[in-house]
Image 1 (cartoon, rainbow, N blue to C red):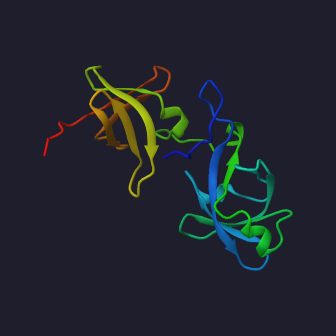
Image 2 (image 1 turned 180 degrees about the horizontal axis):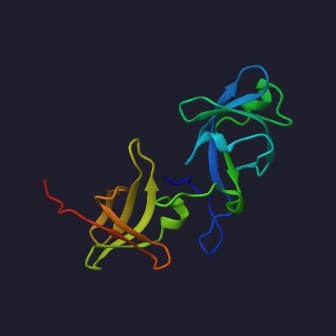
Image 3 (image 1 turned 90 degrees about the vertical axis):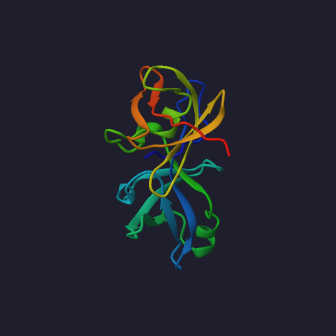
Length: 179
């Protein structure tokens, strides 16, 4: 659904969007194996510029190969040894929002959803979206409300409308049973 974003600017728009997370160094030529976040690994191609989140170091992709499982092997200009690649382990590779991939209908960035007022189909307040957790089958909205924290699968059975302009998301809550 959505790539995670780094802490942003006051209007809620992040300074950088996370595009991948480096898992480990790969081979002897300075490549890294990275998990592509929120999109097709094919968006990484020669010449794409990414920023290492923690250090703000800019890297230019020298080569990229999809691994078939969503991971991608990346090589960067100036990262030519396993030792140099190893220094990137665990790092998030980010892009500026203006260079982010185009989203399809029904996709949103996490930063766009966090802070939306969550309401039910009749307009009654459920809470506020505080986070979006990545899941295996689908993402999960975390909603903070008077009743505490609740989670809603990001599927049409529970999310009937996302209205970014109106600052709200329409949910179909279910009755919680006490144990």
